[in-house]
Image (cartoon, rainbow, N blue to C red; front, top):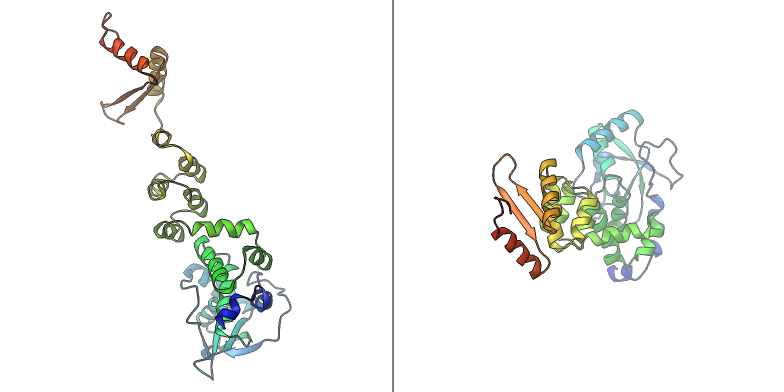
Amino acid sequence: MAQKAERRGLGRGLSALMADVDTAPANDAKPAERKAETLIDVAQISPNPDQPRRTFAEDALNDLVASIREKGIIQPLILRRDPRNPEGYEIVAGERRWRAAQRAQLHQVPAIVRDLDDTEVLELALIENIQRDDLNAIEEARAYRQLMDRFGHTQEKLAEALGKSRSHIANLLRLLNLPDDILDMVVRGDLSAGHARALINSDDPHGLAALAIKKGLSVRDVEKLAKAPKEKKAEMLQPAKDADTALLEKDLKAALGMKVTIDHTPGGESGTLRISYKTLEDLDEVCRRLSAVDGGKV
């Protein structure tokens, strides 16, 4: 069955399965027409053990509980007969609503019961997760990758069926080329998807990611650093100089005709003076001036 699903393109996979996945907000007062639904006892329903999503934000779940208490469940769950329990049902889409309904102490929930095999259940669960507003970029990218790898869908077909742009899908998929620990930073919210995209072509994604978090760099800052040569990166990472130090650098540069950099230890008396030369003649000139004594001035 799995091999057949991989060759089917859109087929039954997306076009038919998405018929019951409502992308409108859960509190929409006018949901679209759908297949006939029925009321199912909460106690008869079990979650899908292969649900791709493992975490549910507590705050969002509490908000949904409050909405259900006020307006009830407007968008029905999608269920199938539980293959492990003939008397029960398994959730295909809508586990958050089921969890919230239990907290709201509802005894029954509206549901659509469909005849789906294991492959279709996984596919529909992935589609529903993609449509969630609170899905982070890495979760969304991994869902696209699963749909492509397991079911043979192309980026173009996914974009058409899910109402996304192809560039959106392609950009998210590129994030999966980053090391796993950097992907975890995005999942935790330490880095945004924009920061992560800027790291893809960096020669030191780990170092730049750590720096972006430590210094609170903008996405634009990270993009510049990722493209800059090593010497330029070191310069860009220097803390902003005070006006007196910047003026002294300017005066010395004018006097020597060479680039001068002063790195003064904040709050201290010490620091580093660097004179950058481009030719051996420039170096000879620096040495000549440093060895010359003219009234105590170089």
